[in-house]
Image (cartoon, rainbow, N blue to C red; front, side, top):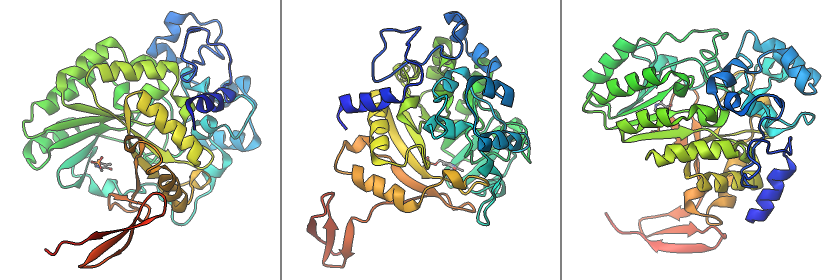
Amino acid sequence: MTPSAARRADATQKSSPNCHFNPECDPLFLSYAPGHWPHIPQELWNDWKWQLRNRISTLSQLSEKIQLTDSERNGIFLSGSKLALSITPHFFNLIHPSNPDCPIRRQVIPRAEEGLYLPHEFADPCGEDSHMPVPGLVHRYPDRVLFLVTDRCASYCRYCTRSRIVSGVGEQELHTNFDEAFHYLATHREIRDVLFSGGDPLLLSDEKINDLLRRVREIDHIEFVRIGTRVPIFLPQRITHHLCSILKKYHPLWISIHVNHPRELTSEVKDALSMLADAGIPLGNQSVLLRGVNDSVETMRTLLHKLLRCRVRPYYLYQCDLIRGSSHLRTSVRKGIEIIRALRGFTSGYAIPQFVIDAPGGGGKIPINPDYIISHTDEKILLRNYQGQTFEYPEIPD
Ligand SMILES: *Cc1c(COP(=O)(O)O)cnc(C)c1O
């Protein structure tokens, strides 16, 4: 899509046409503020603690602001004992008030289908619990660990792979043992990469974030530290100069964000990502392929191009995990392959994420690629290019 076509596609989905706080904003990166909160002064709107205190988390708050379907009403009753409903005002404004198929809405407003459990679905689809040597630390790969530092997020994604432990209402609780976890990291010299996630690490206080990064940096065999967060998308106000001044003390520090639809890249989000990039933090994006959200080549291309403009390198595109009650959000694997095939060669290589399936039961991430190898013998490899033409490369004897 050309930039002007992308702009039109995004603009037609805009729910609130007044860029109230920022009339000069880039037409490709819209602002939806203050939307449903017209009387909130800008200082309060920009205060991340105000955003958290004023999250939409009940049926009555929701139905005051948007037209709910019966399926959504039922889904909201279910969410009380499964995965909490919570949406920051910033993100809530991106929802189309009357279109139940709105791609933003599908991600954060529960539906009755969440109560539909299929036989191959699990509470812990990637087998994390069985790979925890210490509560809160998942050690699946030889040289790196996933460190779950909180069970809270700014808003809750309905397809959350950790809904069993996240948000405080599910069937399990996360009891991370920080002292034991740091002891494990210090005594396992094979670990060179620590990924802080949760829940969302950037919901912790500046002091706590500083403390975690300082402690991990005291371990000299840990070369590489990263944070997985959706805070820049759900709560861009949290990305303050003070937070950036803490993060930049601990380089090399990388951040993976999570954006699924181009509309999520608002002017506020772009500014927050700019601050992180200016603090020297390389940014990657992880998307989940979701039915009715981003399962089209056009939407995905617009998203990927917007990410590059925000200095974010698309990292992974995940096939949706087999989390219980997520069948309405999953697509076929074939669809993901088709999208990657339509992108590779047709746009910047930097824009193309690796499509992966996180293996059910705990086998780790497995790359899924369109087939570019037609045949491979000791003499030659026969290849197909992005246009479907065939090429031969002689194989070199070992
Ligand atoms: C995704 C993941 C990682 C990081 O994997 P990369 O491919 O290095 O990004 C590490 N540990 C666990 C358990 C994971 O799920």
